[in-house]
Image 1 (cartoon, helix red, strand yellow):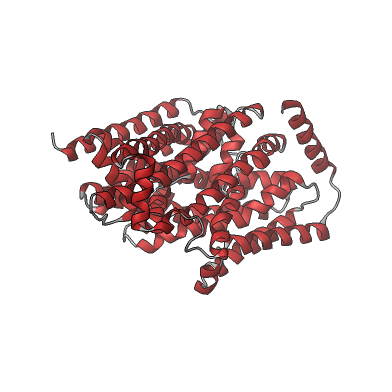
Image 2 (cartoon, rainbow, N blue to C red):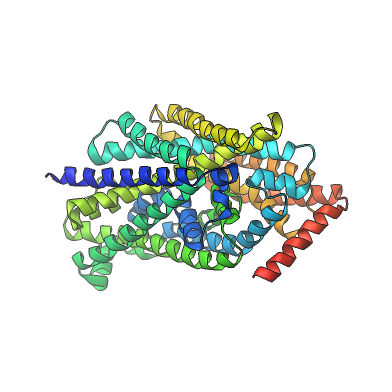
Amino acid sequence: MSNEMYQLLAIIIYMAAMVFIGWYAFRRTSNLTDYMLGGRSLGPAVTALSAGAADMSGWLLMGLPGAIYLSGLVEAWMAIGLTVGAYLNYVLVAPRLRVYTQVSNDSITIPSYLENRLKDKSRLLRVVSGIIILIFFTFYVSSGMVAGGKFFLSSFGLDYHVGLLIVSAVVIFYTLFGGFLAVSYTDVVQGLIMFFALLLVPIVGLFLTGGFSETAASIREVNPQLLNFISGGSFLGIISAVTWGLGYFGQPHIIVRFMAIGSVKEVKKARRIGIGWMFLSLFGAVSTALIGVAYYQQNNAKLADPETVFITLGQIIFHPFIAGIMLAAVLAAVMSTISSQLIVTSSALIEDLYKAVIKTDASDKRYVFLGRLAVLVISIIAIALSWPNDESILKIVSFSWAGFGASFGPIILLSLYWRKITATGALWGMITGAATVMIWGNVKLLTDTLYEIVPGFIICWIVTYVVSLATYRPNDEIDKEFTETLEILKKES
């Protein structure tokens, strides 16, 4: 059997496992809460690993190692910012959001939580939130599908469109039928594959390059500044990289995991697992790049595409079947993010737009059917956007991350910690945050200076706070729910 066939066999086994998990989750899904939120039954390990896998797309295995390979540790500031942001998300958001979403009319989506928390009778807040999620995530999903198509093109020489359709078909199948549970369970498997792959490649690779001292010496021969955290980076550039961590507070596909965990007591366990997974995975990605630099220097070779350093090292180090599992890790990173975004977009379309605006008296069975239909429709639109293989669409990832972080982040935090936030304040904050990101993100001079999430986050926070103070009126129901949330947190923590 050829090397390529071994690798293809590993990919086929991985794909089959994803389909099986989708079928298993389908058997456990009976109502809308099950389909959209897994019945609020996730354990800490599933919560942590699914949040991590949903968060880390192909950037973890390709983008980050490629950037480190080219520019050195100065590119690691984004990883540092993301780790700190993820930790603060577990501490500040996870416990309160888990309790508050249940206390406030058992909300199962972020837009429905904001409407219920702020008692917005106009439904504008829910609708605008749903529209923002729908627009940003449709493009976000398409960027993942582009990555999937390119994966098969670069790894097996398969036609881009064939690869795109294979990845899309598998993700659509398990997301459409299995819903949130399928997405979460597949994320666990995908997260574990990514984790072990990112540890194995640098550990075994270190033996090939002669250990720590030999590896470091080889890296310095290429460029001594590659091991320097500040060389080649400007102050605002480093700030831009670190502030990626701000985005966590407003990412619907990540914080929805906190709403689905079994209880507040399990949040601390989830945090330890999640941050441990994230730290070691990011450390593995950075180490892989540096070992790649040393390996190619020692062998007088040149890597054609720095973003493939993880894949090429895996193919050099391991048996072709194990190398195929390394390839599956890249695919897992891409697919886990697509599926998580699909289910959140589906919930926005059905729970926050159709159910809230058009029809409210249909059966749960009908809503689940519509949720599945929404996954299919959104997927078809995303495939259409992905079809031209336009590389520029990949830029929407950082843009969307900033958009969600600036639109929802400050509002989520204020809604959990400040009684006086109002629906009007949240609505205007959300709109101005999104508008700031859209304007700033499309002016090259501004984006080259500072990442758009920084001004967007700050402006959203200020507008929400000022407008809320101006429009605040005491509300007994809001005060009662806020107090009840604090009491439950004190009791269960």
